[in-house]
Length: 305
Figure: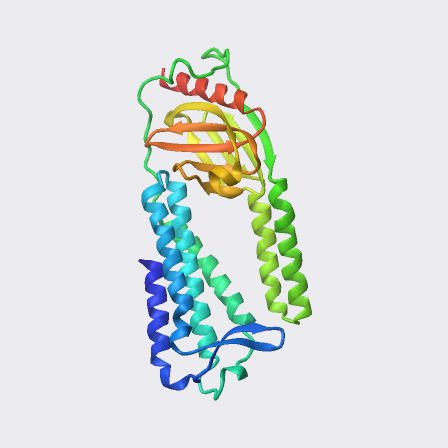
């Protein structure tokens, strides 16, 4: 409801400006100013696209969001996109009020930057306010045929590996470089916030530390946040699977698979798959997944004994 409400407010505000806007409204800007135009009705197309995108995010959260992290992420994305579309729509049209022709409209870099900042703030608040999953301890032992390690109840053990995403690093680094060059060439210094934000996002999402210990499984970004955690008392079974990022998850990063599995997919190859209570499944691509799965099964057994 939040993203739809934000875009509805933007639409009503723009409708109130109908008599103040030029017949030819600027909708796209190039290096020399506006180079794309539409009628008044056409100016609402971005909001219609926003409604479709945000509704799609809701649909994924409703039907495929088996775990709280996925639902909260989709809710945050939807809210942030709704805010972005609303700010950019009202900002670009507000600057054209009273103009004889949209070709006279000023540049919109500041509006886009403002929209991105507002989107991040709204998305962050939505993520924090959305409810997480309640505790759901598993009942009964881990399946007898699941792999285990020889570990007595009096012994303690932990496993940890660092995993990165070299496949995503190249295009992501190129995006940071291109947006930086573009901001400098256009002499739009405020736009440098975009590559800065991308660089922070890369640092937070492309290198992770995966740990299995008596608390369960945790995958944490090397900068400390975000993190994904499966408590040991919610583990039903852990196995090793082979992952093809594009085919199974549609790309790299924290993804939602076609079959409803959540995945921290940083590369192709072996991964630990953790089935937990509430029909939730988490897949994490990491080396030595067999040891991690065996230890997690053993620790889950020990916790339930």
